[in-house]
Image 1: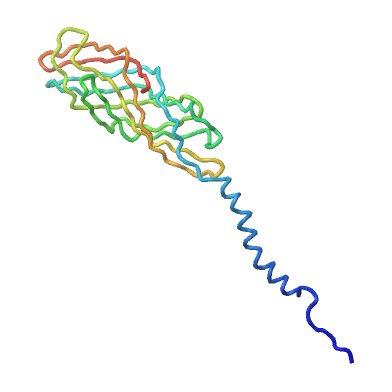
Image 2: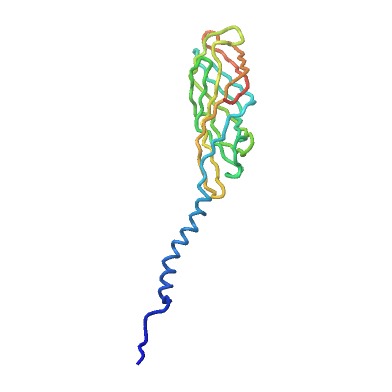
Length: 207
């Protein structure tokens, strides 16, 4: 009588199916990892700089040797130094949140008046109108023009720059502080017995 050997000569099909089921998630993870790494979330650009060349004008109305200074100028903001313009949508929004005016004697005054919002473009110089008012600034008596005791020397503005990253379309709010020196400054007017009007003019130079 011949005995038949019932031991399997190969791999059972059910064993193959089980092995395939266990290996699929590992394969999927291995494929998805490089894709995720290739598209990281965008971060705030660090290429916002203060541009030069805008005219600066301010008028101080003085009473009791205390002036209220109304500033009118254009804030030139440059993104020309951005290394990779493909990381963001071309347009961004600039929201002014605070401003500080430093006088030639080193004193600084803050104001939230006259802050605005504008649209800028990456890779260019974008201009944002600014008309702000600063109060409580001492003005000494000076009857001989040009007025000499004190004048605006620097304007700093805090922004929230709202940018949209690519390809994620993730919106980022990026705080930025930019400063401009007032160069070529000229002050005309007088302050006599604590009262008067002084006009300041100059050019904005990015710091």
